[in-house]
Every structure is written in C-alpha cells, then in structure tokens.
Amino acid sequence: MSSATKRLEKTMDMATSYDKWKRAAIAHDKSTKLARWKSTDKSSQFDYISIRRRLKRLRKLRTSKDYAGVLYALNEGVHGNIDGMGRAGLYRKAKFGTKKLIVNYVDEVAEALELLASPEASCIPAQQRLDFFRRAQHCNGCSALMMSGAGSLLFFHIGVVKALWQEGLLPDVLSGSSGGAIVGSLASTHSDKDLEKMFDPENLVHEIEKDETLFRHLAAFKPKVATAGEVRDVLDRLIPELTFQEAFEQTGRHLNVSIAAAEKHQTSRLLNAITTPNVYVRDAIMASAAVPGFFPPVALAAKNDRGKRQAYMPSRKWVDGSLSHDLPAKRLSRIYGVNHFIVSQANPHVFPFVTDSAGDQGPMSAVQRATQRTVREWINATASIMEKPLSLSPTVNRLTNVALGIMNQDYVGDINILPDKRFFNPLKLLAHRSTEEIIELIAMGEKSTWPKIEMIRIQTKVSRTLSRILRDYDRPSQPVNHHSLSAAS
Image (cartoon, rainbow, N blue to C red):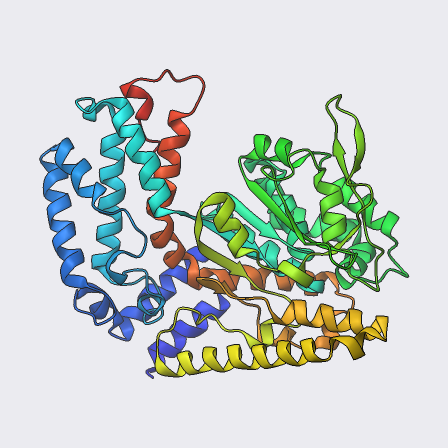
C-alpha cells in the first residue's frame, strides 16, 4: 500500500462530514486503480451485456421522445436487482460506488420514469400511466430501515438515522424494537424541520445534557435509578402524544414497533398505522423497551371514537420486542411490499456474531449459513425433547423460551450497518454512558453509515422516484389529469 493510499485511509477515518469522507474515498479509488474497475463494464457478478443493451435501448427511446416505446421498455421490468446488478459484492470492491454502467442504467430508468410522469407524455392517457406507476412500484418494491434493540447503543441508531436523513435517503418505512423503537419514534413523529433542529450538533449535546443522568440510565435499563414513571416523563417530552395514524399523517413515515407478549401462548405484535392505527406511540415505545426483569410489562392505550384515551386489549401486557421480532422483515414485506432492508444492528447479544456480508454468494459463506441452520435446528430439537423437564421450573422454562426466541431470529438485511468493535464488551453495554461517549456513539453511527450511502442511493433511486411520482399524483390539490403526473424534482 502506497503512502498516498495510507494517507487517504487516515483522512477517511478522521473525516467529520460525509462530503469530506466522500472526497477521500473517491481519491482512494483513483489511487488504488479501482476507478478504472468502475469505468469498465465487464464483470462476472452481473449480466453487464444485458444491462448495457437495456441502457442503450432505453436512452435511445427517451432522447427520441418515443413515449410509448419508453413505457413498453420499462414494462419489461423495473426491478432493483435486474440481471444481478444489486449484488452486494459489486459495492464492496471500491470505497465509493460501483460500476459506472450500473449507475448510468439506474439514472436512465429514473429519468425515463420522470419523462413519462411529465406533461410531455400526455399522448399516453393519464390513467394508463398511473396504472403503470402503481404496477411498477409493486414490482420494484421499497426499502425499510430496521433498527434493532440496542441497550445503551441506541445512540448509534441516532447517528445512522441522521446520516441517512441528511442525504435524503431515510426510508419512509421504519421499524424498531426497544432502543431502536425510541429512535424510530423520534424520526416518525417529527417533521423534517424539527429533525433539522434535532440533529444540529449543539442541540444534540443540549438534549443529552438536559436529562444526562436519566438518559444514561434509560439506555442502560437501570430501573432502580430510572423508574417507569421517570422514563415516561422523558418520552412525554421527546415524543408528541400521537397515535400511529396521526404520526403517519404528520410526517408521512410508517413507524413500526415490535412488542412481545408477556404471557405464554400469546403472539408478538408489530404496531403501526395499518394494524393498530389508534394505539398511542408512547405506550408502544414503553412496551417495546420493557426488558423482562428490569421494567414491568406494559399495557397499551388507544384513542377511541370520541377522541378519549382508553385501554387497548386491557387483558394483555407487553414486553421488549427484540425478544421475538428484533427485525420484523417478513411482516414489513407483507404489509408494505418491502423487499430491500437496511439494518442498523446494535443488539448487544447479536452484533459480535454478525457481519455486513449477508449478500455474499461464495462457497464459504454458503457453508457458514448451512452450519448455522443446522446448529439452530439441533438446539430447537433438544429444547422440544426437554420441554416437560424444563416446565418443572417456571424460571428456567421462561429463560429457555426467551433464549430460543432470540436464537431463531434473523439479524441481517441487504445492507447492514454495525458499530465499532470497541463497544462489543457486554459489561460496557449496560454501563452508564458519559456525554462524551454518547456523542461518540452518534458520530460512530454516522461514520458507519457513510460507506453504505452510495450503495443505498443507487439501490433505492428507482423506488424513491416512483414514490415521488405517486405522491404528487395523490395530492388532493391536483386534479386527475395529465399534468397531475408531473414528477417532483
């Protein structure tokens, strides 16, 4: 490694903003000759010949204003991983971005979609175009940010959300459990203007110092210091009194909170504006953060048809959602059509054993996944055989069920953002965090996200374009005509 390359890596490590990191990463790719790799089409990881042919055809149709031809070409497939171009390995070789051919193709598809949405394409009936955009969105799918349970690392999630939001890449679908639910609720109950103020460095320090002791004990789950009432006081100050439906109407973000049943034989829940529109967000967060043995189970509340607060499923109480569905990928897929998952993984008992290589297709990765599945099945089989003896001790039986619930989950997504290994110490995870450490965790969340930004931008550009087009069309102020399909800039 040359001295220039080493200096650039140090510059990336010391960067205090994404723009500075980006400039150093691009220079690093030039220094290591990876810029040349990006500029050449050839690769064994995707069908570059097919993508090159698609790009050439679509560009020709668009520049010649052949609207019917553009519509036909796009109808052949608006998919995020068409011809393998979404494969994770294509984004790990260089420090910044991937093959220029992939970037050009994604940009071309986005421009073609915006052309069809513009008044220029009025020769195609508005309803026909609208039907196409809805069908394309269904086929292409959308992205979600899933934030794990976090212990005192919940501040890492704040850095991740901040980095994505500042680049305009924060998905509209957010899920969280425990600490992740707290951060998700902050992002989903505040407007963009409020988030801009919230993410200001000086304001972050002010908010942390405002309730420094309680913030640290809340993150560390120390009920002897921070009672449930004190935790509620903090949430009352940070989170507006909104139902899930009201929060969505205010911000346009779909908040999803995982909770687990406190009683045996009851199923876990994913709370959101679709499944539980009238449930109060604050109560859902309290339930999702109720770690068994540290905080008591929580009963939910909802707004009734008269606008009054009342109990929701009064016979049921709920606890920490990370025990059963830390990352509710299947449920998000079913409810929203999500097929692209960004994971901020800071669960104390999980992230020492996971990597960001979920998309690896190599033989060693396949063997590792098969081994993990085999071990999991053997443990489940053993637990089933021992079910009767374990039932003789309620405490051991409960702990076994919790352990099985944690073990049987999947903890990675398409893009995984992980904390620095310095925070892997399990003793430290439940320790008090100083203001300096909290600020460091937020900065770590940002820095851990920066290398993923361009991958997220490329892989979500088509879905973001489709969402803008359909959002503009659905605005009540716009009549249903050709002009109502104009895309936002």
